[in-house]
Image (cartoon, rainbow, N blue to C red; front, side, top):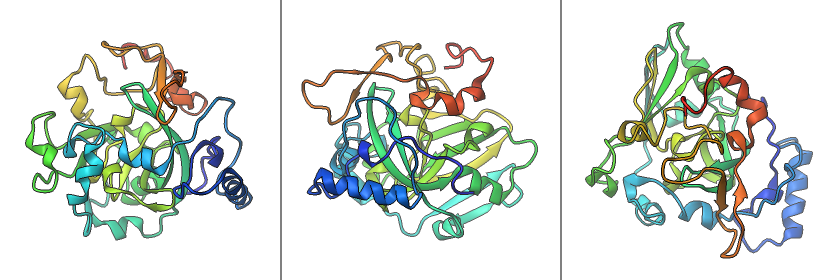
Length: 300
C-alpha cells in the first residue's frame, strides 16, 4: 500500500544524475516533485551536502565483486540480471519462485530519499525507487507462526569474482524481525534517481532498511524465507562480537574497533568535519517503538 511514509529529505539533500544541472534547475525539479505529492516535508535541520550519482554508484561494499570500494563498479557488469527470479518460501500461504516481472506486477513504485549509514562510519543520502516489503509479504500471505524474514543474495561465482575468496560464508544472508520487515520504512528498491538499479548497487532488487547499518540492506536478492527462528546473518555469523543481528544505527554503542558517535559524509571533501550520528540514523520517531524495553547495547 503506497504512501504510508513521507520522507523528511528532499531533492535539496541529493544531486540528480545529470551533474550538469545547476542548483536552480535542481530546485525547480524539487518543486515539481513536491507539487505532485511524491515527496513531502522539508529536510531536517542539518548540514547535508549533496551526493552525486557517481559517488553512490562508485563507492560501495558488495564483497561478491571484491573488497575495494571501487571493485563493485569495476566488476559488477559481469552479473546477469535478466531473467531474474526470487524464491519465496517458509511460512507463507503462496510459496513459489516468482519472476521479477511477477513481483513487480501491481506494485506502486515510490521515491524514497533515505540516509544511508555504513557500519564503517561513513554515510550518504540516496534517492531510492522501490516499494514497501510489506506489500510483497502481504501478497504471498504471512502465516501465524512467522516471526522473522530471511534473505539470500545471488551466489554465482562465474559472474561474481569475489565469491572465490572466503571473506564470508557464501551466499550472503541477512534477516529481519517480522515487525521490522513490515514497517513502512522498509522497502525493496529497484532503482535510484528514477533509473533501474545499477548492478553494483544490488540490481535488480535489494532491501533498504534506513535505520540500520548498510550491510543489513542485502543486495541482489534471490530468496526470501519466512521463519519462526531467527535466521543466520552473514556478518553476525562471521564476527558476532562486532556485528549484532539487529545492527541498528546507534551512536551510543561503538564498534569494538571504532566509535559510532560520528560519521564521514561521502562527498564532503578533504577538509569536511565529521557529523554527529543520529540515533536510528535519524528515524528514531518512526522506529524506536519497535525496540521498547530492549537493551540496545545487549541487542546491538
